Amino acid sequence: MDKQKFQKFRSYNLTSGSMDEFMAARDGALVGASVAARKGWTPGRTIDLRAQLGLLMEVKGVFSSGNEEQDNTILADLEFVQDQYDARGKANQLLVKVAPGGNADQLAGQIDALALPTRTSTQPEKAFLQGMLEDLSDLVLLASLVVAVTLIVVFIGVANTMAMAVRDRVRQIGVLRTLGFNRLRIMLLIFLESAVLCAAGGVLGSAAAWVVLNVQQVSVQSRTLNLVISMPWQVAAAGVAVAVLVGVAGAVLPAWRAARMNIVQSLGSVG
Image 1: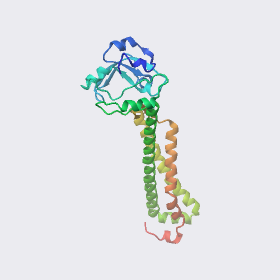
Image 2: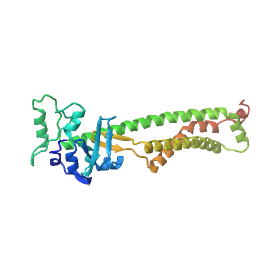
Image 3: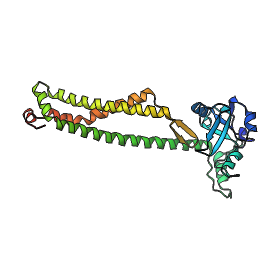
Image 4: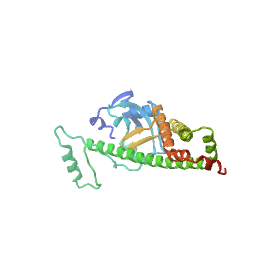
């Protein structure tokens, strides 16, 4: 952003650091409160983004704007950033402040109608934010579909595993029936085995996810909004519970078949 103009668009209240130092340093950066808290950045800290963006900057201040979108941004000098890309005079986003009483939609149309060397797509900030939320909704929907497909695959795998286990234990099931185990207890044993196996898998999967999310930061970004993915214990517990439910559901048919086995035929089977 242009250091001489950016404060005319929004109010940036510094919670730490110095605005004067930021204005004086060409490679200085102002960091939003959300980014600073997530990354542990404080004034004087060097931000090394050379691997991602080719930028190396020094934090000169941390600001809070009261807007989560803005508090997830890093402000740097426009010409400094342009020079790192050898793109002096170029920008990918321009902010236009509408005069009091002005019509944002009408102004957007007038800007896009200008004979400019580069095509523009201008929209009011509310529309931009709405588009950002729609993008996030699409990501959530996609993630939900992936989860649904994963659960279907797991369900099929559990059902196949338990069906094989029942086929391998036909004689043992017959022996249990002769010892007084009724059909309900046989079904409960199959359900219990499947639930325990899936619970163990759920615990291991939740633990692995928790380790990954705590070892490195995982986030989802839509335009300028950045959401950090975390895993509280309630989510981990829900994951284990879903695993158990899938295990029980996958064992329904194998358990029913085990309970319906003929005792004489079961005892006469080989295996």
